[in-house]
Image 1 (cartoon, helix red, strand yellow):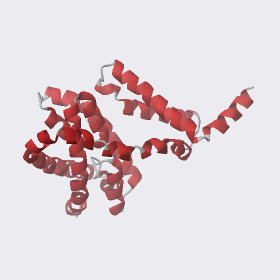
Image 2: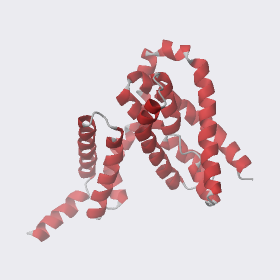
Image 3: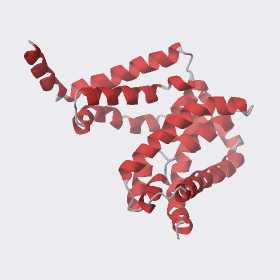
Length: 240
């Protein structure tokens, strides 16, 4: 009986539908838990989905390539989801236009700080040059960050890990940090997390307030553009 059950699992685990269903189910459960805790920062559904799925893959001895054959459908939806950010942006276009100058200044300062700080810290800890280059675009959305990493002849897989960790940490600490700093303007809160924590931070911003999510989405897109231009110059100058 156990042998038959194992054989059935081996057969089912090769189906993309199984891992797509598992991914959606686990995230649904994690999101329900987050909602039950009134969206507590530490109940971030992305964070808990990652470790639960990772544990399932380890326990079932499933290769990542097999898992991604199903999860790639969710990955594909990242593009349409990013484009959909244009809808609340259009609805709040007057507020965005009114804050244009502060946004430009914040974008430049935030982008420079995100790149320079990680390069200097990594260099201070004596990390290899290849790792430093891989970490430099950590605050940009994954697709752009990995492209930057490849252009620098760095390791895109390390970059992807750094991007996800940055996004999760940003999503966890942004609300307590902004509350402690007594920053109540949701435009500023959203824009800050969009620069620092890209898509995962933007998702958190929308959970807190729609206006924060709008400005976070703007910051995420603009930061990707600025960072793609800034990183090659910054790492060349800082690592000479």
